[in-house]
Length: 243
Length: 288
Image 1 (tube, helix red, strand yellow):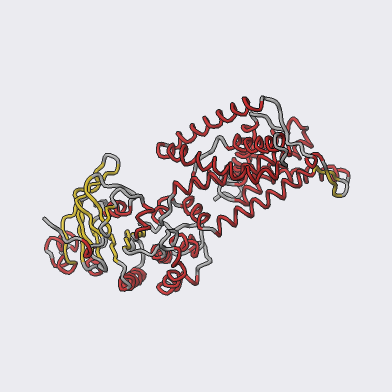
Image 2: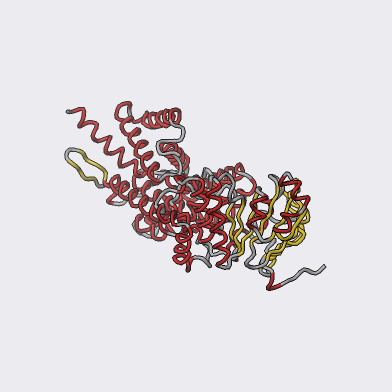
């Protein structure tokens, strides 16, 4: 089967397997993302979602299959080269640098060569999206609340001047109002032309926010398609919405 | 009053000496804080700095302090290679491997020193190393004063470097969260090599000033390592200010302890204090 190639695809994951030691965490995973899309990967805890993102970011390498970004095979690349290329991950649990100020955290985001020359522009953009970060720029990151730390993590990711933003469990443990605000910002970021791939346990919400979604179960993709179509799918309703 | 006057000398000496100890410990603390490896060879690398100054002085007639202009880049290079080609590789295996390799490095260095410079005690005896000056009724060796000034300069420079440069910020990021540093596009292996290299530059400075202050032998490295570990334990890891305070406390314990219990007991007093602090505040005075 031939899949659409070239300009129409920003990220193409083809039939990858990945292991944590001797445990196989991903089985024959395939997905394709087009520029400007907002794509969700949903599934229960332990379904392999984070492993998939870590494999895309180069923290883990697939044992089988390939990952292509803008036509380049990056399956064997190290993380910092992948960031240079334009993929930025906002990790689960935020992982901001606790003993650095908010501004220093943002500066770390612009460490890669492509982002350094445009640091001031990106900083301005981040402050526009999250005015609170500008207010608290001199504060140590560990003094921020959970929601503020998530804003910082997203801001830090944006500072790397990404073409594709990958977000892992962005809304985990946050109040609904803050989650709404974060999704609002994601939509804004996407309008600026940045492609978004996010992972969530909250299936209902994800299928509302994403254009396209992949559903994972025990390391495999079991369903995929338009998010609106998946919302109506009987098996999805039964498994995730209790209907 | 006589009691106070008598104590003034060891107290001032202890504080000044503490600066030198802080410089010796700073490199160890930096590498431990960032790379999380205990560099057992740190003391010997400091002594390498001392011998470098010794060769510059005796063979080429260059002042040891001036020779740092060459010594610092040389040790920077050596440090970068040690981390890049030895420790980064061992790091991927396990922390035990790093410890063993550093221990091996220590033995190799000591034996090279022994072969090249014989077991004889050496010193960087420049004219100013022997001169002294006085404040009030107290007389000090001039080098003690130099040690302290240099310690302050080194610490301020390191602090500003870690705060203001991209590399410095990357070093702190890698120290605080390795995975997040990767995701921010930081090549942590390279950052570790730079961290070790910087720790070696500080060791070079420490080595020369130790050589100006005390005689040294091929096996002095071990005692300097033990002093540095004591300082780091006192001050708490990963803090420049903590290392400075730890150095001063260690210096004070040594000189004031020596004053009351005799020279033979001065290190005993210093290490008893390290043990007490370790028992009461295990993370050190400035520890997190």
